[in-house]
Image (cartoon, rainbow, N blue to C red):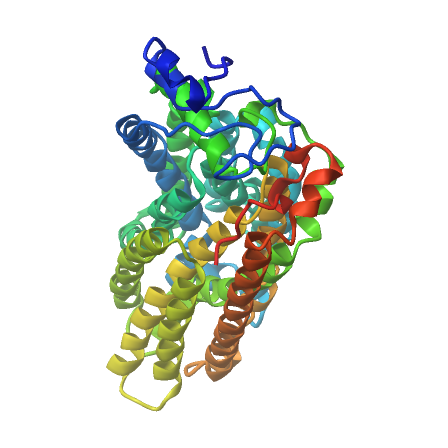
Length: 512
Protein backbone atom coordinates (compact mmCIF):
# COMPACT_ATOMS: atom_id res chain seq x y z
CA UNK A 1 0.00 0.00 0.00
CA UNK A 2 2.91 2.40 0.72
CA UNK A 3 3.86 2.39 -2.95
CA UNK A 4 0.38 3.03 -4.33
CA UNK A 5 -0.39 6.41 -5.85
CA UNK A 6 -3.62 8.17 -5.09
CA UNK A 7 -6.56 9.46 -7.04
CA UNK A 8 -6.81 13.05 -8.29
CA UNK A 9 -9.38 15.41 -6.82
CA UNK A 10 -11.42 15.17 -10.00
CA UNK A 11 -11.97 11.49 -9.12
CA UNK A 12 -13.50 12.30 -5.72
CA UNK A 13 -16.33 9.90 -6.27
CA UNK A 14 -13.82 7.02 -6.25
CA UNK A 15 -12.21 8.02 -2.96
CA UNK A 16 -15.00 6.68 -0.80
CA UNK A 17 -13.90 3.16 -1.66
CA UNK A 18 -10.24 3.80 -0.77
CA UNK A 19 -8.52 3.34 2.62
CA UNK A 20 -8.06 6.60 4.54
CA UNK A 21 -4.32 6.74 3.94
CA UNK A 22 -4.97 6.62 0.20
CA UNK A 23 -7.25 9.66 0.33
CA UNK A 24 -4.53 12.13 1.16
CA UNK A 25 -1.45 11.74 -0.93
CA UNK A 26 -1.12 12.38 -4.64
CA UNK A 27 -2.02 11.27 -8.12
CA UNK A 28 0.57 10.08 -10.59
CA UNK A 29 -1.70 11.16 -13.42
CA UNK A 30 0.71 13.75 -14.82
CA UNK A 31 3.92 11.72 -14.37
CA UNK A 32 6.97 12.52 -12.24
CA UNK A 33 8.68 14.69 -14.86
CA UNK A 34 5.71 16.73 -15.99
CA UNK A 35 6.04 20.51 -16.24
CA UNK A 36 2.41 20.95 -15.24
CA UNK A 37 2.21 23.57 -12.46
CA UNK A 38 -0.90 22.40 -10.66
CA UNK A 39 -1.59 24.49 -7.53
CA UNK A 40 -0.72 24.87 -4.77
CA UNK A 41 3.00 24.12 -5.08
CA UNK A 42 3.70 23.51 -8.73
CA UNK A 43 4.09 19.79 -8.11
CA UNK A 44 3.51 17.28 -10.93
CA UNK A 45 0.38 16.08 -9.15
CA UNK A 46 -2.62 17.62 -7.43
CA UNK A 47 -2.58 17.62 -3.65
CA UNK A 48 -5.31 15.99 -1.63
CA UNK A 49 -5.49 17.30 1.92
CA UNK A 50 -4.18 15.06 4.70
CA UNK A 51 -6.72 14.12 7.34
CA UNK A 52 -5.97 16.37 10.34
CA UNK A 53 -6.77 13.77 13.00
CA UNK A 54 -4.43 11.24 11.40
CA UNK A 55 -1.76 13.91 11.00
CA UNK A 56 -1.93 14.83 14.69
CA UNK A 57 -1.80 11.16 15.69
CA UNK A 58 1.40 10.62 13.69
CA UNK A 59 3.04 13.72 15.18
CA UNK A 60 2.05 12.66 18.68
CA UNK A 61 3.55 9.20 18.18
CA UNK A 62 6.82 10.66 16.90
CA UNK A 63 6.90 13.04 19.87
CA UNK A 64 6.61 10.18 22.34
CA UNK A 65 8.76 7.58 20.55
CA UNK A 66 11.62 9.74 19.21
CA UNK A 67 12.09 13.02 21.07
CA UNK A 68 12.67 11.53 24.57
CA UNK A 69 15.52 9.37 23.26
CA UNK A 70 17.12 12.33 21.48
CA UNK A 71 16.77 14.35 24.68
CA UNK A 72 18.69 11.68 26.57
CA UNK A 73 21.40 11.49 23.90
CA UNK A 74 22.00 15.24 23.91
CA UNK A 75 21.83 15.51 27.70
CA UNK A 76 24.57 12.91 28.10
CA UNK A 77 26.60 14.38 25.23
CA UNK A 78 26.72 17.79 26.85
CA UNK A 79 27.49 16.32 30.27
CA UNK A 80 30.36 14.21 28.91
CA UNK A 81 31.92 17.07 26.95
CA UNK A 82 31.62 19.74 29.64
CA UNK A 83 32.15 17.76 32.85
CA UNK A 84 35.86 18.53 32.52
CA UNK A 85 34.90 22.02 33.75
CA UNK A 86 33.43 20.49 36.90
CA UNK A 87 36.42 18.18 37.32
CA UNK A 88 38.80 21.13 36.98
CA UNK A 89 37.67 22.81 40.20
CA UNK A 90 37.53 19.44 42.02
CA UNK A 91 41.22 18.62 41.73
CA UNK A 92 41.88 17.79 38.06
CA UNK A 93 44.05 20.87 37.49
CA UNK A 94 46.13 20.17 40.60
CA UNK A 95 46.61 16.42 40.01
CA UNK A 96 47.55 16.75 36.33
CA UNK A 97 49.41 20.06 36.78
CA UNK A 98 47.25 21.95 34.27
CA UNK A 99 49.10 25.23 34.66
CA UNK A 100 48.99 28.14 32.24
CA UNK A 101 47.09 27.31 29.04
CA UNK A 102 47.31 23.52 29.35
CA UNK A 103 43.67 23.19 30.40
CA UNK A 104 42.55 25.32 27.44
CA UNK A 105 44.61 23.17 25.07
CA UNK A 106 42.94 20.04 26.45
CA UNK A 107 39.58 21.61 25.72
CA UNK A 108 40.61 22.54 22.17
CA UNK A 109 41.86 19.07 21.20
CA UNK A 110 38.31 17.73 21.53
CA UNK A 111 37.12 19.87 18.61
CA UNK A 112 39.68 18.81 15.99
CA UNK A 113 38.12 15.39 15.19
CA UNK A 114 34.69 16.75 16.17
CA UNK A 115 34.83 19.22 13.27
CA UNK A 116 36.41 16.90 10.68
CA UNK A 117 33.79 14.16 11.12
CA UNK A 118 30.64 16.31 10.80
CA UNK A 119 29.95 16.22 7.04
CA UNK A 120 30.95 12.60 6.24
CA UNK A 121 29.05 11.44 9.32
CA UNK A 122 25.83 12.96 7.95
CA UNK A 123 26.32 11.16 4.63
CA UNK A 124 26.35 7.73 6.28
CA UNK A 125 23.50 8.21 8.79
CA UNK A 126 20.87 6.83 6.41
CA UNK A 127 23.04 3.92 5.19
CA UNK A 128 23.96 2.68 8.66
CA UNK A 129 20.50 3.39 10.04
CA UNK A 130 20.00 6.35 12.38
CA UNK A 131 18.47 4.08 15.01
CA UNK A 132 21.80 2.26 15.29
CA UNK A 133 24.22 5.03 14.40
CA UNK A 134 23.21 7.73 16.89
CA UNK A 135 23.11 5.43 19.96
CA UNK A 136 26.34 3.81 18.72
CA UNK A 137 28.07 7.17 18.98
CA UNK A 138 26.81 7.50 22.55
CA UNK A 139 28.20 4.10 23.52
CA UNK A 140 31.57 5.03 22.00
CA UNK A 141 32.00 8.29 23.84
CA UNK A 142 30.62 6.76 27.04
CA UNK A 143 33.50 4.27 27.01
CA UNK A 144 36.02 7.05 26.34
CA UNK A 145 34.54 9.26 29.07
CA UNK A 146 34.77 6.41 31.56
CA UNK A 147 38.44 5.96 30.68
CA UNK A 148 39.08 9.67 31.33
CA UNK A 149 38.68 8.98 35.03
CA UNK A 150 41.80 6.82 34.93
CA UNK A 151 44.13 9.32 33.23
CA UNK A 152 47.36 9.97 35.13
CA UNK A 153 49.21 12.43 32.91
CA UNK A 154 48.54 15.45 30.74
CA UNK A 155 49.25 13.33 27.64
CA UNK A 156 46.61 10.81 28.71
CA UNK A 157 44.08 13.62 29.05
CA UNK A 158 44.88 14.98 25.58
CA UNK A 159 44.43 11.52 23.99
CA UNK A 160 41.14 10.92 25.81
CA UNK A 161 39.74 14.31 24.75
CA UNK A 162 40.69 13.60 21.13
CA UNK A 163 38.79 10.30 21.03
CA UNK A 164 35.86 11.84 22.88
CA UNK A 165 35.57 14.43 20.09
CA UNK A 166 35.83 11.72 17.44
CA UNK A 167 32.90 9.81 18.93
CA UNK A 168 30.69 12.86 19.55
CA UNK A 169 31.40 14.59 16.24
CA UNK A 170 28.51 13.25 14.19
CA UNK A 171 25.81 13.48 16.83
CA UNK A 172 24.33 16.98 16.55
CA UNK A 173 24.23 17.10 12.76
CA UNK A 174 22.88 13.56 12.71
CA UNK A 175 20.05 14.43 15.08
CA UNK A 176 19.06 17.56 13.13
CA UNK A 177 19.05 15.51 9.91
CA UNK A 178 17.16 12.71 11.66
CA UNK A 179 14.37 15.04 12.81
CA UNK A 180 14.02 16.40 9.27
CA UNK A 181 13.06 12.88 8.13
CA UNK A 182 10.06 12.78 10.49
CA UNK A 183 8.79 16.35 10.95
CA UNK A 184 7.71 19.06 8.55
CA UNK A 185 9.80 22.19 8.30
CA UNK A 186 7.79 24.34 10.70
CA UNK A 187 7.23 21.55 13.20
CA UNK A 188 10.91 20.74 13.47
CA UNK A 189 12.33 23.56 15.57
CA UNK A 190 10.11 22.91 18.58
CA UNK A 191 11.13 19.24 18.53
CA UNK A 192 14.75 20.26 18.09
CA UNK A 193 14.25 22.54 21.07
CA UNK A 194 12.74 19.72 23.12
CA UNK A 195 15.99 17.77 22.91
CA UNK A 196 18.34 20.77 22.76
CA UNK A 197 17.02 22.12 26.06
CA UNK A 198 19.01 19.25 27.53
CA UNK A 199 22.13 21.41 26.95
CA UNK A 200 21.38 23.96 29.69
CA UNK A 201 19.78 21.22 31.79
CA UNK A 202 23.06 19.30 31.60
CA UNK A 203 24.77 22.25 33.24
CA UNK A 204 22.27 22.14 36.08
CA UNK A 205 22.15 18.35 36.42
CA UNK A 206 25.88 17.96 35.81
CA UNK A 207 26.69 20.50 38.51
CA UNK A 208 24.54 18.70 41.07
CA UNK A 209 25.89 15.28 40.09
CA UNK A 210 29.50 16.49 40.13
CA UNK A 211 29.01 17.96 43.60
CA UNK A 212 28.05 14.54 44.94
CA UNK A 213 30.51 12.44 42.94
CA UNK A 214 33.43 14.67 43.92
CA UNK A 215 32.99 13.55 47.53
CA UNK A 216 33.96 9.95 46.70
CA UNK A 217 37.42 8.71 47.69
CA UNK A 218 38.02 5.04 46.90
CA UNK A 219 41.10 2.94 46.03
CA UNK A 220 43.30 5.90 45.28
CA UNK A 221 40.77 7.58 42.99
CA UNK A 222 39.76 10.71 44.82
CA UNK A 223 37.07 13.23 43.85
CA UNK A 224 37.24 14.19 40.14
CA UNK A 225 37.81 10.69 38.58
CA UNK A 226 34.38 9.59 39.81
CA UNK A 227 32.73 12.33 37.77
CA UNK A 228 34.04 10.60 34.63
CA UNK A 229 33.59 7.01 35.84
CA UNK A 230 29.91 7.34 36.76
CA UNK A 231 28.76 9.71 34.01
CA UNK A 232 30.56 7.68 31.32
CA UNK A 233 28.98 4.43 32.52
CA UNK A 234 25.52 6.02 32.42
CA UNK A 235 26.12 7.01 28.79
CA UNK A 236 27.05 3.46 27.78
CA UNK A 237 23.95 1.97 29.41
CA UNK A 238 21.61 4.56 27.91
CA UNK A 239 23.10 4.03 24.43
CA UNK A 240 22.50 0.28 24.61
CA UNK A 241 18.88 0.91 25.64
CA UNK A 242 18.25 3.47 22.89
CA UNK A 243 19.32 1.08 20.11
CA UNK A 244 16.32 -1.09 20.96
CA UNK A 245 13.73 1.65 20.44
CA UNK A 246 14.88 4.38 18.02
CA UNK A 247 13.44 3.92 14.46
CA UNK A 248 15.53 4.56 11.32
CA UNK A 249 12.89 6.23 9.09
CA UNK A 250 9.10 6.80 9.16
CA UNK A 251 8.49 3.66 7.07
CA UNK A 252 10.43 1.61 9.64
CA UNK A 253 8.76 3.10 12.72
CA UNK A 254 7.20 0.22 14.63
CA UNK A 255 4.96 2.62 16.54
CA UNK A 256 3.01 3.43 13.33
CA UNK A 257 0.35 1.39 11.58
CA UNK A 258 0.69 0.77 7.84
CA UNK A 259 -1.82 3.53 7.18
CA UNK A 260 0.12 5.95 9.37
CA UNK A 261 3.41 5.08 7.66
CA UNK A 262 1.97 6.00 4.26
CA UNK A 263 0.59 9.25 5.66
CA UNK A 264 3.90 10.09 7.37
CA UNK A 265 5.76 9.73 4.07
CA UNK A 266 3.06 11.68 2.24
CA UNK A 267 3.17 14.73 4.46
CA UNK A 268 6.94 14.98 4.07
CA UNK A 269 6.52 14.80 0.30
CA UNK A 270 3.99 17.62 0.38
CA UNK A 271 6.16 19.70 2.70
CA UNK A 272 9.04 19.50 0.20
CA UNK A 273 7.13 21.89 -2.12
CA UNK A 274 8.61 20.33 -5.23
CA UNK A 275 12.14 20.05 -3.81
CA UNK A 276 12.24 16.25 -4.22
CA UNK A 277 10.98 13.83 -6.84
CA UNK A 278 11.17 10.86 -4.48
CA UNK A 279 8.28 9.51 -2.46
CA UNK A 280 10.39 9.05 0.69
CA UNK A 281 13.88 9.60 2.05
CA UNK A 282 14.80 5.92 1.69
CA UNK A 283 14.59 6.14 -2.11
CA UNK A 284 16.91 9.16 -2.42
CA UNK A 285 20.47 8.48 -3.59
CA UNK A 286 23.70 10.35 -2.96
CA UNK A 287 25.09 12.50 -5.79
CA UNK A 288 27.83 15.12 -5.82
CA UNK A 289 25.30 17.50 -7.37
CA UNK A 290 23.59 17.68 -3.98
CA UNK A 291 26.89 18.48 -2.28
CA UNK A 292 27.56 21.38 -4.67
CA UNK A 293 24.04 22.72 -4.14
CA UNK A 294 24.54 22.69 -0.39
CA UNK A 295 27.93 24.41 -0.44
CA UNK A 296 27.14 27.12 -3.00
CA UNK A 297 24.11 28.55 -1.27
CA UNK A 298 23.86 31.87 0.57
CA UNK A 299 21.83 30.25 3.33
CA UNK A 300 24.60 27.76 4.03
CA UNK A 301 27.31 30.42 4.05
CA UNK A 302 25.53 33.03 6.16
CA UNK A 303 23.85 30.64 8.58
CA UNK A 304 27.12 28.77 9.14
CA UNK A 305 28.81 32.05 10.05
CA UNK A 306 25.82 32.90 12.24
CA UNK A 307 26.10 29.60 14.08
CA UNK A 308 29.84 30.27 14.50
CA UNK A 309 28.97 33.61 16.10
CA UNK A 310 26.37 32.19 18.49
CA UNK A 311 28.20 29.02 19.50
CA UNK A 312 31.27 30.91 20.73
CA UNK A 313 29.45 32.26 23.81
CA UNK A 314 27.57 28.96 24.22
CA UNK A 315 30.78 26.91 24.47
CA UNK A 316 32.62 29.37 26.66
CA UNK A 317 29.58 29.70 28.94
CA UNK A 318 29.15 25.92 29.26
CA UNK A 319 32.84 25.24 29.87
CA UNK A 320 33.69 28.15 32.12
CA UNK A 321 30.51 28.92 34.08
CA UNK A 322 31.83 27.13 37.22
CA UNK A 323 35.07 29.10 36.86
CA UNK A 324 33.24 32.42 36.38
CA UNK A 325 31.03 31.86 39.42
CA UNK A 326 33.96 30.75 41.55
CA UNK A 327 35.78 33.97 40.60
CA UNK A 328 32.94 35.89 42.29
CA UNK A 329 34.26 34.62 45.63
CA UNK A 330 32.35 31.38 46.16
CA UNK A 331 33.80 28.03 47.24
CA UNK A 332 34.06 25.09 44.81
CA UNK A 333 30.93 23.42 46.19
CA UNK A 334 28.88 26.62 46.05
CA UNK A 335 30.18 27.41 42.56
CA UNK A 336 29.00 23.97 41.36
CA UNK A 337 25.56 24.45 42.93
CA UNK A 338 25.21 28.03 41.66
CA UNK A 339 25.55 26.81 38.06
CA UNK A 340 22.13 25.17 38.41
CA UNK A 341 19.70 28.17 38.44
CA UNK A 342 20.97 30.00 35.30
CA UNK A 343 21.08 26.74 33.38
CA UNK A 344 17.53 25.94 34.43
CA UNK A 345 16.49 29.37 33.15
CA UNK A 346 18.12 28.54 29.82
CA UNK A 347 16.27 25.22 29.77
CA UNK A 348 12.86 26.89 29.96
CA UNK A 349 13.81 29.61 27.47
CA UNK A 350 14.76 27.00 24.86
CA UNK A 351 11.30 25.43 25.11
CA UNK A 352 9.52 28.80 24.98
CA UNK A 353 11.67 30.22 22.17
CA UNK A 354 11.41 27.20 19.88
CA UNK A 355 7.66 26.89 20.44
CA UNK A 356 7.09 30.53 19.53
CA UNK A 357 9.38 30.27 16.51
CA UNK A 358 7.42 27.35 15.04
CA UNK A 359 4.14 29.17 15.70
CA UNK A 360 5.21 32.31 13.83
CA UNK A 361 7.18 30.21 11.28
CA UNK A 362 10.20 32.51 11.58
CA UNK A 363 13.70 31.98 13.00
CA UNK A 364 15.41 35.36 12.70
CA UNK A 365 13.35 37.29 15.30
CA UNK A 366 13.94 34.60 17.91
CA UNK A 367 17.70 34.78 17.34
CA UNK A 368 17.79 38.58 17.50
CA UNK A 369 15.81 38.69 20.77
CA UNK A 370 18.02 35.95 22.23
CA UNK A 371 21.22 37.80 21.31
CA UNK A 372 19.92 41.02 22.87
CA UNK A 373 19.20 39.20 26.15
CA UNK A 374 22.69 37.68 26.18
CA UNK A 375 24.27 41.07 25.44
CA UNK A 376 22.53 42.48 28.53
CA UNK A 377 24.03 39.60 30.52
CA UNK A 378 27.60 40.24 29.37
CA UNK A 379 27.24 43.96 30.07
CA UNK A 380 26.19 43.06 33.63
CA UNK A 381 29.35 40.95 33.96
CA UNK A 382 31.56 43.73 32.59
CA UNK A 383 30.36 46.66 34.69
CA UNK A 384 31.79 47.17 38.21
CA UNK A 385 29.10 45.87 40.55
CA UNK A 386 28.38 43.54 43.43
CA UNK A 387 28.73 39.77 42.85
CA UNK A 388 24.94 39.34 42.88
CA UNK A 389 24.67 41.61 39.80
CA UNK A 390 27.36 39.64 37.98
CA UNK A 391 25.65 36.40 38.91
CA UNK A 392 22.36 37.81 37.57
CA UNK A 393 24.11 38.41 34.25
CA UNK A 394 24.63 34.66 33.84
CA UNK A 395 20.84 34.21 33.80
CA UNK A 396 20.46 36.62 30.89
CA UNK A 397 23.27 34.90 28.98
CA UNK A 398 21.76 31.44 29.40
CA UNK A 399 18.28 32.73 28.48
CA UNK A 400 19.64 34.31 25.29
CA UNK A 401 22.25 31.98 23.81
CA UNK A 402 20.67 28.58 24.36
CA UNK A 403 17.43 29.22 22.33
CA UNK A 404 19.49 30.79 19.52
CA UNK A 405 21.46 27.63 18.81
CA UNK A 406 18.56 25.33 17.79
CA UNK A 407 16.98 28.25 15.92
CA UNK A 408 19.98 28.74 13.64
CA UNK A 409 20.28 24.99 12.96
CA UNK A 410 16.60 24.61 12.12
CA UNK A 411 16.79 27.75 9.97
CA UNK A 412 19.31 26.17 7.62
CA UNK A 413 17.59 22.76 7.65
CA UNK A 414 14.34 24.52 6.67
CA UNK A 415 16.00 26.22 3.70
CA UNK A 416 17.79 23.22 2.19
CA UNK A 417 16.27 20.25 0.34
CA UNK A 418 16.24 17.36 -0.48
CA UNK A 419 17.87 14.92 1.97
CA UNK A 420 21.51 14.91 0.83
CA UNK A 421 21.57 18.67 0.31
CA UNK A 422 20.30 19.07 3.85
CA UNK A 423 22.72 16.42 5.12
CA UNK A 424 25.71 18.19 3.58
CA UNK A 425 24.58 21.70 4.52
CA UNK A 426 23.81 20.95 8.16
CA UNK A 427 27.02 18.96 8.53
CA UNK A 428 29.03 21.81 7.03
CA UNK A 429 27.24 24.37 9.20
CA UNK A 430 28.06 22.48 12.38
CA UNK A 431 31.66 21.89 11.26
CA UNK A 432 32.22 25.58 10.57
CA UNK A 433 30.43 26.63 13.75
CA UNK A 434 32.50 24.30 15.88
CA UNK A 435 35.65 26.04 14.72
CA UNK A 436 34.49 28.64 17.23
CA UNK A 437 35.69 26.22 19.89
CA UNK A 438 39.27 27.25 19.10
CA UNK A 439 38.28 30.74 20.20
CA UNK A 440 35.86 29.79 22.99
CA UNK A 441 38.33 27.57 24.81
CA UNK A 442 40.81 30.46 25.06
CA UNK A 443 38.38 33.23 26.01
CA UNK A 444 38.80 32.72 29.74
CA UNK A 445 42.46 32.45 30.69
CA UNK A 446 43.90 32.17 34.17
CA UNK A 447 45.84 35.39 33.78
CA UNK A 448 42.56 37.31 33.21
CA UNK A 449 41.02 36.22 36.51
CA UNK A 450 38.96 37.26 38.37
CA UNK A 451 37.17 39.74 36.10
CA UNK A 452 37.72 38.03 32.71
CA UNK A 453 37.06 41.28 30.83
CA UNK A 454 38.61 39.98 27.60
CA UNK A 455 36.44 36.84 27.55
CA UNK A 456 33.19 38.71 28.23
CA UNK A 457 34.03 41.31 25.58
CA UNK A 458 34.81 38.70 22.91
CA UNK A 459 31.49 36.96 23.48
CA UNK A 460 29.61 40.25 23.42
CA UNK A 461 31.18 41.09 20.05
CA UNK A 462 30.12 37.76 18.54
CA UNK A 463 26.54 38.34 19.68
CA UNK A 464 26.49 41.67 17.84
CA UNK A 465 27.79 39.87 14.73
CA UNK A 466 24.98 37.30 15.04
CA UNK A 467 22.35 40.06 15.08
CA UNK A 468 23.83 41.57 11.90
CA UNK A 469 23.88 38.19 10.13
CA UNK A 470 20.34 37.28 11.22
CA UNK A 471 19.01 40.56 9.88
CA UNK A 472 20.86 40.06 6.57
CA UNK A 473 19.48 36.54 6.10
CA UNK A 474 15.92 37.66 6.83
CA UNK A 475 16.12 40.34 4.13
CA UNK A 476 17.69 37.89 1.66
CA UNK A 477 14.94 35.29 2.25
CA UNK A 478 12.24 37.93 1.82
CA UNK A 479 13.84 39.16 -1.43
CA UNK A 480 14.24 35.67 -2.91
CA UNK A 481 10.71 34.59 -1.93
CA UNK A 482 9.25 37.67 -3.59
CA UNK A 483 11.08 36.88 -6.83
CA UNK A 484 9.71 33.34 -6.79
CA UNK A 485 6.20 34.63 -6.07
CA UNK A 486 6.42 36.93 -9.12
CA UNK A 487 7.48 34.01 -11.32
CA UNK A 488 11.04 35.26 -11.83
CA UNK A 489 12.41 31.76 -11.12
CA UNK A 490 9.90 29.80 -13.24
CA UNK A 491 12.46 29.36 -16.02
CA UNK A 492 14.11 26.70 -13.84
CA UNK A 493 11.19 24.37 -14.56
CA UNK A 494 12.53 23.97 -18.12
CA UNK A 495 15.92 22.69 -16.90
CA UNK A 496 14.74 19.07 -16.84
CA UNK A 497 13.61 16.85 -13.99
CA UNK A 498 11.91 19.20 -11.54
CA UNK A 499 12.71 16.87 -8.66
CA UNK A 500 16.40 17.59 -9.17
CA UNK A 501 15.91 21.31 -8.52
CA UNK A 502 15.79 20.83 -4.76
CA UNK A 503 15.49 24.14 -2.90
CA UNK A 504 15.85 25.91 -6.27
CA UNK A 505 12.32 24.88 -7.23
CA UNK A 506 10.26 28.06 -7.93
CA UNK A 507 7.56 27.00 -5.46
CA UNK A 508 9.95 26.27 -2.59
CA UNK A 509 9.92 29.11 -0.06
CA UNK A 510 12.73 30.10 2.30
CA UNK A 511 12.04 30.55 6.01
CA UNK A 512 12.89 33.98 7.39
